[in-house]
Length: 392
Image 1 (spheres, rainbow, N blue to C red):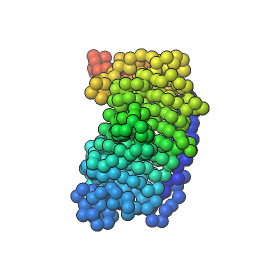
Image 2 (cartoon, one colour):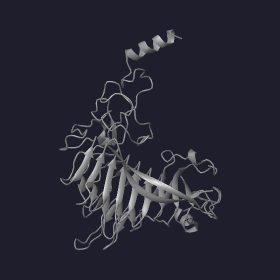
Image 3 (cartoon, rainbow, N blue to C red):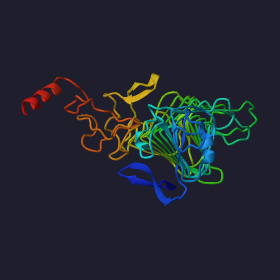
């Protein structure tokens, strides 16, 4: 029996690491079930892969609160309007049984919501919903006097956006006298949203307001946590805050922001930045710890070249020489953006011992042949191997 998630939020401070914890209270829903979507289905009822709906919108129309919608890989040229209480999961091959949810792979089985040809938001959220494992792209939103949010629009809701690649979405406004909203990739307005394990890049707005993510408040509270995300190549800014409580944790802001990685702030709630890499900040109020940021010494912060592997080509993993290795918090999420384990202690670098987290969204991984855990494979490892071999 599937469960309906009733989502509430709280912040937890543990040894300097600010984590947004989503507390899920489950209640059984009698009609909850699984609906399937596949380009190879016959579109009849969505109850199996052969009878799967051929559009995600058709599955949403047939769903009810508590249902999960499983979507097989492929490109779906449509926009989505969610209903409360449903969960959308991409990354399926298209043969998984009801008890084989864990077989899905959103990286190998890319599931694309292609909003090209429409002039509205790609995904309009609803309360108590989850969108997990999708590429959301090519939205060209034209909505004079609208709210904004070309990729995702979250207005007055609670929502989880997880394991998504949000790219090439644009909020268009050709008349300088018209307000067209904000948020090229994601708009959070009067909402509580967790954005986790996401790539957010190459999104934009013509009014240069929250090209990657915009957080705003009009008539309610916005509470946003950005966890284990990579945000880059959003032309003006990666994150713009007009109001609300925002926590940025274990996140990397890469190249490409002309203005600032993070701009704006709620005057009553400083932006919380923990265990992250942010190389340009609008000069407002922040609470920052264990991060690579400019002009905020103390609290475990550094201000150094993060030494990414190949940022010009989108690779923001850390070189062995990076000062961000083993320099973060002593607690954090169990995996990084690649799904690799955290934390990994590289001996002789940063803080040795358990709980030596790296700053940013990627954890440096030891090569398998690195027997002495120093981050290198060399003669020392060969000597250790020979010693252990002969000691058997």
